Image (cartoon, rainbow, N blue to C red; front, top):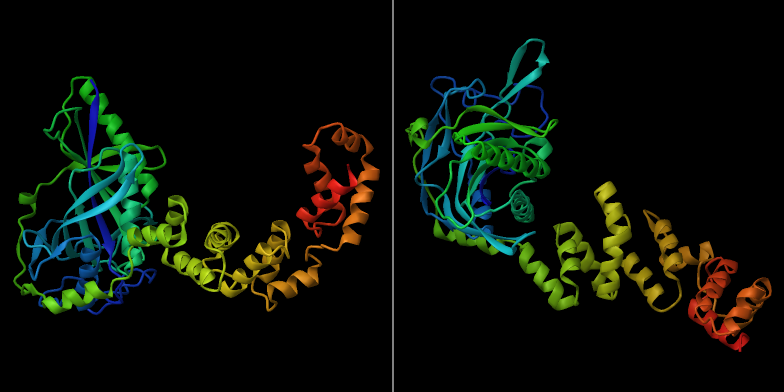
Length: 472
């Protein structure tokens, strides 16, 4: 039997607000346990929630970027369940009337090429607290700093067909959210978490199988690994004649296995009902359109423009548009006159290596543009330019000043070139004889030897011209 995998994802993204969803407590990460709390997020009797306008605004931006329809009226509900990190005994969320529905995300499947993943809904909710199992020996501690932190939950349709596709989709969604300033999506700090639903069915059929849910994964690599493990588990169970139960699982990243945690809840188990303390959220159409108008150029559009306007390859455009800072830096370099393809090569090479290491570009765009110009007009070789680039990092010199100081400006003086060529001819009589007997590929070897003698300063094109004259 050949099995088809069916995957749907729920992404919980922390909205980039200073305060929590329904109170004024700080939403910042890293405070000592249970210090960013108040009667509202502690669920004390008589405390009343007040919606965070900025959180709603950011959720609107996310919905528009995902191609969703933003509804003018949405409703907060109570999602009832009992867990130690949920002090009220319910979570304020949205259910049958969410903020937005019906979007699409474009991404690249390793197997199927470009695919569209449907967004069923985007709704706003508050986060729960966090259980800590390593603070007190033999006990579990509860930190309620995260209780009430604003989240947007983004739910896909069952459109993904492999763990690798799931990872590709998550990469695309994260990029959109960061581009639009909705969230920093820092997975190490819990700003983006993923729940994944997976089922299998015989290839060619349309009926969905029994799905399981893997909860709270905090890296895209672990999402892919967990889904691979769960797919293998379900196929093995069905192959042994067993039925797949609808359960919630946790992924053990150390051993690469999934383990059942509890029976999977259904919507009726949560006893949703409208929160009596919160009126419906009613949005002004002009506010929605204002947010639409202030969105930046999104990744798909930017990649397409880079290909069209700069003549870049699809791959180069994808790398350069991967982050706003990288795209802006590349365009700043081209705006000072650098050839776009040469600028792309430098940005994706030396500049991006430094950015990935330090989080910033240490050579200003005008300086890199000038350095690229020195290579283009033959003043510097590529090897020399890389040395100059290193000297420009956080330095006051211009590229030409650094090149002069380091003695790296290419020598084109005929006298100097002839001297180095004659020295190489004298030092390599065997190779010279073979070249004269027809082994023309030795021109590269002899050119390299001249470059060595000149310590990289000789102009390679001029060297070959002199060698041709000296080796009739």
